[in-house]
Length: 125
Image (tube, rainbow, N blue to C red):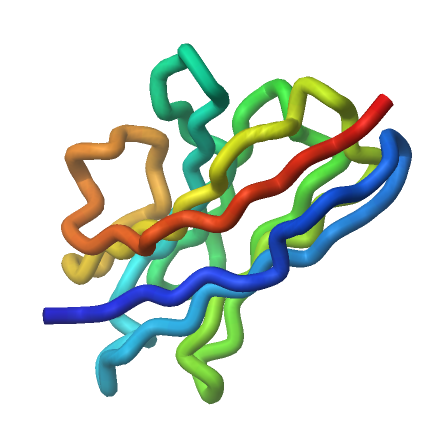
């Protein structure tokens, strides 16, 4: 069982930045595609960003393109989500997810096997 632990959430004003981290408890992290999803109150969970196992492919939701950047550090077994120019509509619980099957970091939640507990991001106007 792989554990994913997110950190870095918090309260920030609109226009500000946050960096989320997700540490994975696996020795084969380099084989995992990783993704970030979010869920706002009363809404469905939605895809935010994904990165392939090789790091060569990155996918983003249209709503965050140009503002968010996903990256990975295989030496640290960690994936990051740099969030810039934050908006109130980015307020949500952000979840890290892992696909252990040499995936491409796609947007489908069913492709991910392991999930973190979530970290709250609140953007005030």
